[in-house]
Amino acid sequence: MTTTAPMRLVRERTATPLTVLMCRPTHFTVSYSINPWMEPENPTDTARALSQWSELRRVFERLGFTIEEVAPGESLPDMVFAANGGLVVDGKAYTAKFTHAERAPEAGLYADWFRAAGLEVVDAVETNEGEGDVLLIGDVLFAGTGFRTDTSSHDEMARVFGREVVSLRLIRPDFYHLDTALAVLDATPGQEHIAYLPSAFDDASRAELERRFPDAILVDEHDAKVFGLNAVSDGLHVITAARATAFQHQLREAGYEPIGVDLTELLLAGGGAKCCTLVLRDRTAESADPATASSMSTASSTPTTEENR
Ligand code: ARG
Image (cartoon, rainbow, N blue to C red):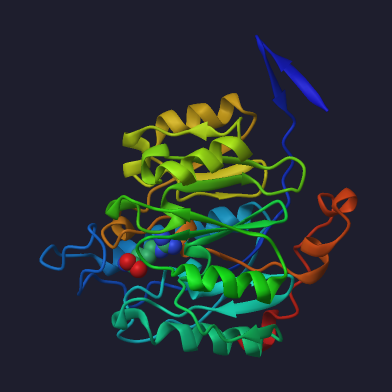
């Protein structure tokens, strides 16, 4: 079903509340530098990070998301960036294996949470930073490489999930994870829609994105740099950086309802809304018949909740 806007067709967007895993930034700070955003000599404000993160959580709550929390590890200041904790598709969790020693211990804490939640856990052999570098769009996994995640893990996750994996090469150090340069707006098979920053990708990857997503929203440099693309979408509401105003306009034109959040404190570590969010996809919602998948709610489906708090 479509509604007509002047000179263009806008698809009717529908919300499917997500089930997500988050990690409170109790120990957030910038004490080392593993990306160009991180400047340990500049002070950070943990209380401010906590209140900004809590606001993001409240937005998710208002949208009806099911929110799980993993306990933050002491001396792991980046653990708030839950997207890097693994990749959960079809009720199966593929663990992270971090590039940098500073974050390496996070992988085990996330894996423990997955196990306690009753997910089938597959321990990664190859280096990968979870959903920060791997996005499910339709039935296909799009996997970033260039800075963190190794292409050998792309092969590994193709085997683990039995899905097509498309490798995308990132070339700009300030957009070092795939989810900083590409936002999934609608992951529903058959109506896939994304937004991205073309200059973040090498020529071959850009050509692949153009071929697969001819109607993608191309985001400008300013909005990408305020981490507008580090966005979470339920198919209708798109939670993005408050300062990404042109992107929000583009989203409205395309039928979405953008919600701007201020996560500037977390940006001092090179993270935004999506980085704080790991989507937990259960078996039924993702591997169901595509004809019925879009109407299926994921809200009640994670086999987890209360016990493992
Ligand atoms: N400081 C963290 C790092 O460099 C930020 C991670 C951001 N996460 C993401 N999914 N993009 O690893």
